[in-house]
Length: 139
Image 1 (cartoon, rainbow, N blue to C red):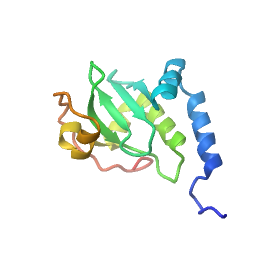
Image 2 (tube, rainbow, N blue to C red):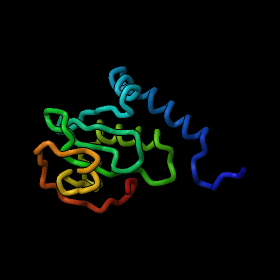
Image 3 (cartoon, helix red, strand yellow):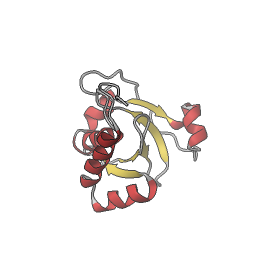
């Protein structure tokens, strides 16, 4: 069966996950193996972020207690496999946090009914954050 041009196939998907895992710290690898997410620390703010397995709305900013307080959506352009997207998000937050935040669509969890159903709020609010329309590499 022919695959659609520009859409990653199963082999590309597996290779992207292998590349991601090779670029995680031992603690991040353990988190990812157990929970399908890993945490990173922002390069400029020192804030903690959780990158969950997925391609969109898969990055959360965490408070000091580890509760999700803000959902972020930023992905590189192109039809990339999930591992490549997650690795790009990790690198962006760890090395270029302010640039990543500048292009990210942000939503406090309390204002996003879908996320609030999926990830119940614990009385925390973070923000206010402006919503930016991305340009360049990220969309």
